[in-house]
Length: 302
Image 1: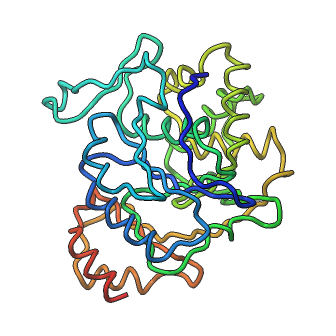
Image 2 (image 1 turned 180 degrees about the vertical axis):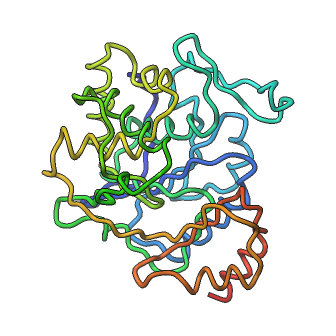
Image 3 (image 1 turned 30 degrees about the vertical axis):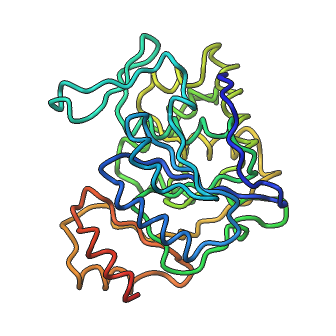
């Protein structure tokens, strides 16, 4: 395991929680909006960590504050994983290369950053929030705990109803990484936006992967290339660790617009109006092209 210097947040309270966001340059304005809505609506948070590639650090530094830190991926990931301009995108994007892994894209490395952060912080729970999310209602991070147990999102038999083949592949690859026999897909779905993990469980997952394969956990996942960090975490808790430190929940705290055409002002207002009672945030995927200024205007009306 790498052993970088630790980041010191405010983890003094019982069951402390950090919000964690992996982002990148093109999503900067969306991430700025997320930060503003966290500051306006979120309580029970010890710290907010924003994880970015080295070339994006200076851009995101302007979002830092007493309870918000930008973390360079070079302080999280092994030095043998190199971010380079990608010629297949005319050098407008990055590709991560190493002799120990397959070539990795940004969405792979964002997942690796989320996992790796556990080794640098002291908060008990990490609550992952994408940079294209915005909080609309009050949210207390402490509500993810039930006594000493942290919420584990699980959509019961969700994969049995999901026709997307990559989700089943992610699940079977999670079994391979964790040494679960036989290495087949689970029927359950663990993927959701706004999700909580225990820091100690993440550490145990990394140790488990390294013990099973005899190599760094980043190597194992980087060689698979098709993986989901949420699925790895969920299967580890359900099938190896057990529910001593978790309880199951299928509540989705964030309403997400995953795909489709750009949302107009009316479309955004209708989307917000369609939030379930216990949902506290919306996520408008950046690749839908929905104007960030229109999202801001909609939030002012919400």
